[in-house]
Length: 118
Image 1: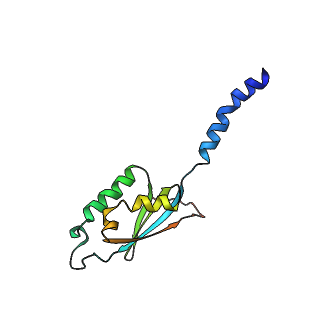
Image 2: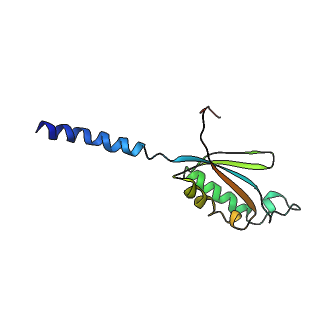
């Protein structure tokens, strides 16, 4: 009986500890302009740009984007996904990528120093 009660008491600990190990990985997505980018137009005038912005907004609301930034001519987001294939699949739902307004390179992201950004 003691063994049964002990197992009953410890079972939630094992269940919760297993859930913690299924943490999603981080991936970095680097965006550059694609072959259908019209250099004569401003970004907001590009075809599919509004849909691209809406898509990223949806990912932010779903807490799939950790952070985003731009540097030089490159856009960057850090996303959460189970694996590289899941990250690619998620991002290629974006019509702007499908229509080659942007190109994207996706890599596993392993932060060695978790600082504070504000």
